[in-house]
Image (cartoon, rainbow, N blue to C red; front, side):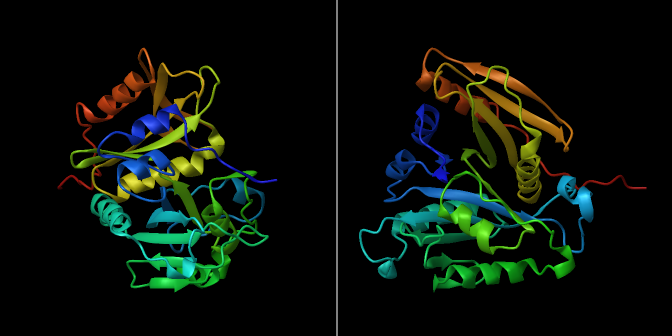
Length: 304
């Protein structure tokens, strides 16, 4: 049976209390910013148009040189306290949407809300959409999927032969929807934590593990590629990975991934320690913010 991935623990709850920090799926964060429901922020990207993956056995190990970031999605799961047909985003939801759009410009950001009731396949019956393309209001899951698939504008020859597998553990029904109805050319990745550093933004991938001397898995290379492409697409964004244990609240490892492919991941880790969880969270925030990282996307060329 598919279970939901747990999101709340000492580290995410601690981060949720800090100003200028966004934590996906955190009830504590939602409470702090005045939201009735916890938002999740996701990035969607695809390989460049006209690029066709290889056929046969090589298709499974193929990775595009970069992803084109199509959109970000700010999603809300609405409890069925009242009929979803009367849903409309509140001022707090629109405010956090505006905050995300401001920090991740020029990437489009869509707000997607869906009810907390699903059919036997784990899909919701309808969606409420605020998409920068002009879509606003209620749409069926298939209708919005068709719209996004057309936005990709791929051709049939670009479709890989395999289908996306639904993980044994999922984050929420939105993830199931992306795997069930959207083109397989699109890749999604949660933005677990966003830390604003003046004009610079740290996008943090979280990995919970009790394993000592943990290192990133090559299976997650597509996630690294998508986050790195987001860093390329938005000025002053950089990405890091933080590994921590739910059982040990006195240290975390901040991983800086330098390069990756299906064979190896090259990077380095910095261990941050403290006497308790609260001090570790503060140390992480200070590490990401002070001194401000010099993140950039260079397009410089030497003049001949």
